Structures are given as C-alpha cells and as structure tokens.
Length: 273
Image (tube, rainbow, N blue to C red; front, side, top):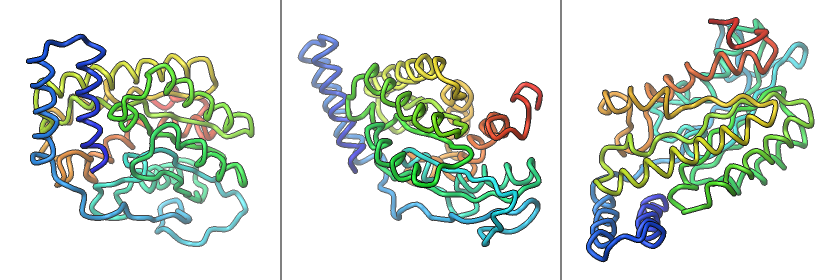
C-alpha cells in the first residue's frame, strides 16, 4: 500500500507547492484517503520467469551460451509485471520471446526490477547487473517517484546516470518513460489531475535527459494512455492500478521494435516499420 500512502503525500505536495486554498487542500487530502478504499491491494508478488527463451520455442529453458542474447529488465512493478495473470504475460517474458523470434537467437532473461522501486533503487539494480553486463536492457520506472514527491529534475537526471553506466559497458538500453497516472480512473478527482500532471512532467524530463545519451526512450504515456482510458476493464488487473497481461502486451508491443534495434537485430526501429 506504499503507493497509496504516496498519493496522500502527493496531495500534501500539491497543496504546499501549488499554494492551494485550505478548502482545495482539504479536498485533495480527502481524495487521497478515498483512494485507499477504491483501489484494491495486489494479492501476490509478481511471477518470476527468468531463464532462456528460444525462437519459436518454449521457455524458460536452459540455453546454450553460443549465439545467446542477454536481456535485463530494470525498474518498478511495471517492469516486474505485477498484475500479470501468468508468467507468460510478464513484460520481460513477452519481450524476450519477441526478441528471440526476431533475432533467431536464444535470449536469456534476467529481471532485476522490484515492485515499489523508485529511480534511486536503480543504483543497486544496475550494480548487480554489471557483474555480468547484458547485451540489452529495458528500464521502466517513475510512477513511484511521482507518489514519493521526488524532484522531477533529480529523478530524470538519476535515471540518465544509471543508463549511462549500462551504455558504458556496451549494453543497449531502451527506457519506457513514466506512464500517465491520470489513466488510473479509480484515483478520484482532482487528485488524478495532479498525478497526471506530475507524471507527464516526469516523462518529459526523462525523455530530455535520455536524448543526451545513446539510449532510446519510448513515450509510454502518449502511446498507451488512450487505450487504458478507453478500455480500463480490459487492460487493468483486479487491483485497478497495475496492468494485466493484456496491458503488458500493449506495452511490449510498442517497445519491441526499439529493443530489436538496440540489440542490433534491426538497423533501426524506423526500418522495422
């Protein structure tokens, strides 16, 4: 429930930074408490399906080192796949299968992402990965930075710093920028508008920082929010906050082309269109 407590913190921040009246501040505070009863609690930890994935084959399985691509996933619950109904629907698994099929090579998936992580937690995740640097990496992080009221500029700069560490060892990096928290309809208004503005501001800052690196950023808010707003019953898990397998499949679909480009499977994401 840490992220729900974070919504209340976000309301407090909006009141203090935005100079809201006492009445408006009270509304935001009340709405954050209401979110506790409207949005469900995840019942389980994310599945783990790390291992090898073969082109047109099963997984996870042991894979030979020869010609193997290695894929690492970093970030928060959206990277770990909280809300997916089965291991096959985890975002990392969907991307590993897609990369294996497109490359014709086995792919070994390693997930460093942990639910509840903020961008500050990427430091430890990247530390662990650098012991055996992956060929390519996917990073999904930012939502918890919003609810924790982390500075947008500081969060984006820290993300870019960790991405540079991966790039420095030859890892290709694809980052899905912060999703639109305003797409989570059960967050009551006007708190949802505050969450939306903050999350979109973070996504823009992340993209700006990443544009100064060799990483590829994917604007998840712009690409996915229309779908989640139009079909929430189809794309959210029972907790009404995290995506379900279909929601993760949409995210994997928009990230696969940049991932293939980063892995050298395609010369560029544009060439794959």
